[in-house]
Image 1 (cartoon, helix red, strand yellow):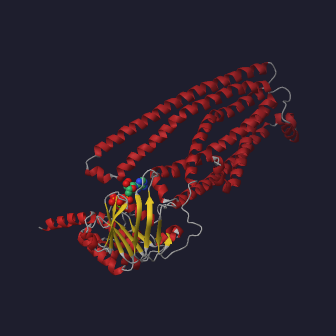
Image 2: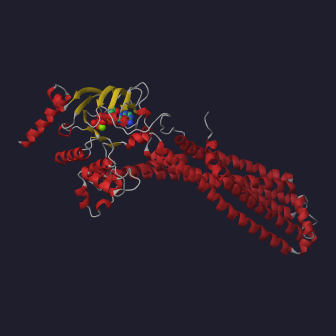
Image 3: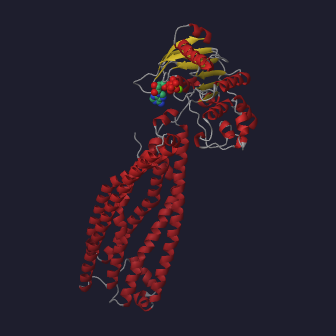
Length: 601
Ligand SMILES: Nc1ncnc2c1ncn2[C@@H]1O[C@H](COP(=O)(O)OP(=O)(O)OP(=O)(O)O)[C@@H](O)[C@H]1O
Ligand SMILES: [Mg+2]
């Protein structure tokens, strides 16, 4: 059954439920105390200049009796003044309590929401991340959460206040004159209707502004991220034009919206003015006819004034409710996504043993198969080189081995040491596989932190050993701050080759038994490539290594080579065997050694 979005919101409100109750009680006491003002003023006027004793609700009558009756109060008006001050103090105290408690409760709720969102996103499958845009995920975690927060802390309280105000104002107003109350309320219903209608109409314009704000930040973000490309191609003025024209459009949307808002408030002012005019005229007529005392008239006008503003805001609250509903749903969509889970019988594994791909077929979408019936074995402690054209499925093979995508049942099996990886705990599997991805990603932290990303506590010895194997030690020690050198965002302050070697060092930390290098030596020269491979053999000789590369010199020292062609295994054998066979490997070998030969001439 589909969970209601407000039921979903309740799970975050619940931990702070009592605080919300206390906030609501405080705001209600403050509102109620504020609503006593007109009653006190009414009594003061009626006692001092009015004729006869006005009729009050029984509890007010009792209160007045206890302080000496209306006659006594009329001759001691300072008691009324004191009562007003006392009410103001009570109102202030509860208003203060409301703000403090409400803010704390809302922040507790929002914190719980952010915490759960972030930890949930951390545990969502990699596949989910590839399906969703980072910008959109961030928008949901920030902007949507802020919308929910704004509604809960502001609009929900104001909805409460309007409710309480309306009840008590009606109670007091009907007590004074039922007919006049009806005359006051009928036009207010028109004002509410107009407000709701208007806000429904401008909701789309608000949304257009929001959307275009997102687009404007996306333009700026993309431009900043791709700053190197922009500069290299001299596209600064083109990018600037793009931003300026979108900014112009965005501004025009806001101007249009503000025209609509100005029209709304002006029409709303006229409607409220007409309502007040009607109330004043009929009220004065009633006073003349003796149906209303002067004090009651003043109190009526005061209650009306108290009600008009929140009632005019009601339309906005209702449209905010719609917007908040959308935000809650967007957050809920993330939370209901299933997390990456191990099978119930999954076990830890040391990942020693042969790696076997057995009739593996896989596609990212049902319509297209990327891997077709792939079978091969990597004997433990040997090196497999993988060669294949772009898009032939090399990455995909490794992502499946690392359980970044789960291989559906019936699509073959991948096993390590005779155990199907579906039955190996994901965390244990990934801990034992050191993978260097095609695009090395570095965090904006120190080099040591980047290399030791998998460590809970940085172990400098281990980090230096890994950096040594990746032929990076010399480069790092030449930096002013050595291992404490800060790396720019996404590694921009390092060269492509330095970035790749940092990523290699990172995967060597902890000496995992399986190492995967996905085209990760492409940005280093052939000499460094050879040195890294020699170091790897020397220091990590026992690991099972998978080397994906387009470079024959990188692959030639592998024990076996697998050639992938459009998702199928096209060749498998030792480099020497494949050199002799007609096929892709020999073509690439001849093309590359021929090139090298020509280069040498
Ligand atoms: N997340 C994805 N969603 C949909 N299709 C994908 C996804 N990742 C890769 N593909 C498609 O799967 C195919 C194989 O991609 P893969 O990255 O495995 O190729 P590759 O052999 O590593 O290529 P290259 O040598 O260019 O790195 C390609 O056609 C690619 O377009
Ligand atoms: Mg690839």
